[in-house]
Length: 303
Image: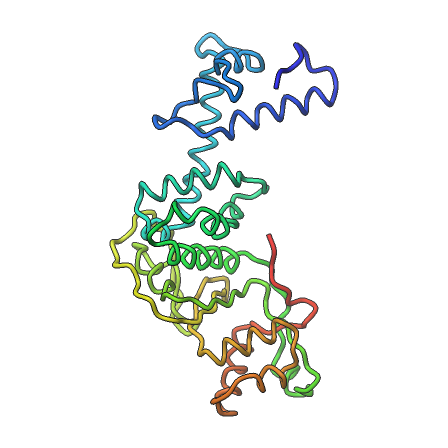
């Protein structure tokens, strides 16, 4: 891409923006410097001089390099902060390679950096070599950590009060679930693992725990990788704090069926081996936690 000497039209300005974006999105070298050659083989110093002015202290190349390093360092820092469990699974060097490759294929397209890891699980599935031999575990950890982001600041709907449920006909009643609530069926207990690798607990095991301050911890503890084991987990928030909650398999299936649009009666009939008392206790707990809402408002959040 070559620019005119002066930007006279909106099209010229857009071309300049595209060139600047392309320059920033190019990965840095192993020494965290700007690459010496442009995509077409031209010297990067000549390309930079074509659209960035030097000053009395820095060349065009050096000025562009500052912007590129700021861009990459900021995004990599965000991934490091948002993915402590994945870092613990892969190790720092392997995670760094994964993070850079991820940002090359899926650069930030959102106005907010909270969405940065949104496609990380998808990318790990597409590039399993970057996480081998722990790809299956890495996928689940990435899914769980993104669910935390959704739970922390995802949208919410007005919760249903107990009297709204008591007066309704279960055969006709369809319920929604809060958009910020994620229901996960996992082949590893990654919930406990992710909490364990943090220096200071940022999650609590249930909404019945006593809430306290939850500062972010950048330093990770060394924790053995979790052994395979099927668990069902709800990741949610309560009173503006982040939690996870283990679910019985039948409770998980009822919630999933409700989210799919089935009636309460249909959802309950789809499970076996549970008593009416258990089901009543589950619905009571879900109502107290504010998980249940009107069907039209309880669609899963998309970002």
